[in-house]
Image 1 (cartoon, rainbow, N blue to C red):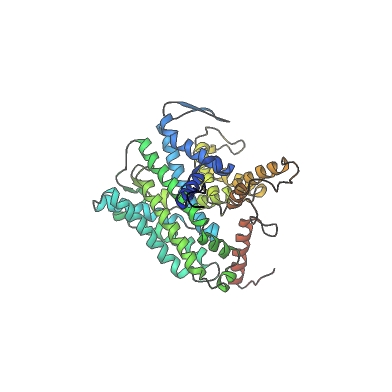
Image 2 (tube, rainbow, N blue to C red; image 1 turned 90 degrees about the vertical axis):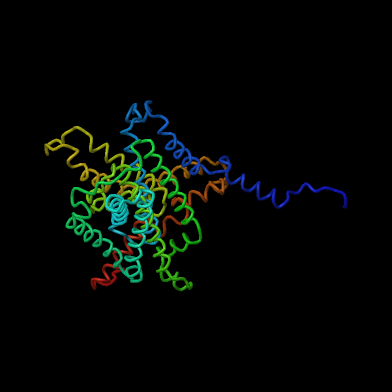
Length: 415
């Protein structure tokens, strides 16, 4: 009736209320809450410099400049692992030489700063652009082909570039590297740069992979022919993911040189094949095709590698220091990990906790849980759709690659 006021919210009030609900941590599922807590702990780490932090299994660890430097390198490595996962984990196109983008971004920025006098605020973005162009030049011809050609090209290209860099010392510095400037001499500032890039990359990749584009990328990984039948061009989506991956990888490489490496760009730190291998291992250990898993495993892997390299102990019988063979020990531990947890540690943890919650849910059989929380678990790679026919995402990607390689060599398909 006229003159009566309605208690129903207006459109503006409804939008404001919805926005507040979206940013209210109380409405988040537990995976998001744990992730936000982890980001908060990383954010406040520089503020704890000079204090001791209790870490289970390690005792009291003092937060000093050395620790901040190690975490700075770990954050950049996590960014690099996420950049690999967004293309290979979601499209199924395995890149064996992703270190190429890291190296091109780092060396381009170093050369422009040292030889052409450009400031770091210009050389770093140009290093990122150079990596994006490299992604375009490699992706356009290789991603349009069916089969393992993309993987083979990405394996060979960084080896060729590494050889050129070593035999062109006037420009690249050769094996000793290129000496250039740094963003800051303060470890806390360098850590802040790395943390901001880490948060930006994590948010960007999660937004893309949880969007309609992410659904298409996942569909390409599962059945590329079905995507084509739906009227979509898989090559365009794969090229988009590859260039995006190269762009972020190049940006991380450029900032890595001017922070963690102290302004020294060396081929062994940026273009070595072992870097690409470690990136793949990190994404697989964390949970391929999850982004979050690559971020977590990238952090843990980098710090674990430093920890192993600094152990002063000798391997019995062999009589060699652990630091000298840490990479082989790491590979052995990785194979054991993949054998027992093939889906990755983040999806396994999410699934284990979710199963325990469902078991504790009396009378509902686990079906009455928080729907939003269930969606989060699924989005992180541990919910429905993570396994198909009893196989993990990694197993399906490997099976696809093996089948394509067999067809390329004339071995046929023995399915």
